[in-house]
Image (cartoon, rainbow, N blue to C red; front, side):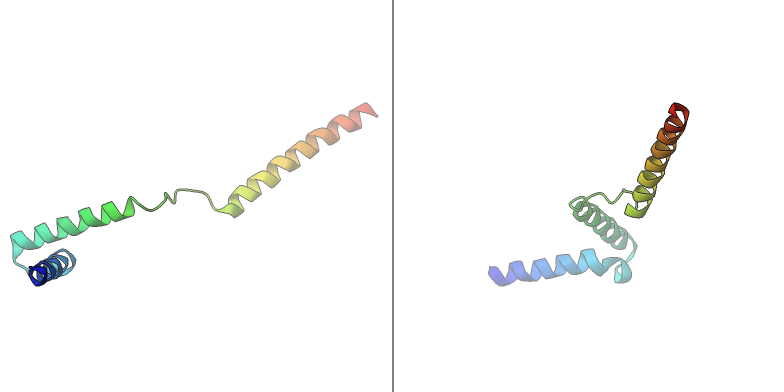
Length: 80
């Protein structure tokens, strides 16, 4: 029973991984759809990479700080 399970596992992996390249049309489509579905499942475990580059965030912080300093400088000049 154990060797049969191993053989089925290997055949399933071949079907999902490479089936669309050598199987006839209806089976190749099923193989491609299965691989796409498996890829989406595994990609759902990874963190979302939709974030800005740290350098862009740092530039925005520097610009914000420069604006604050300019604003304070104008107030200090008016007070003197």
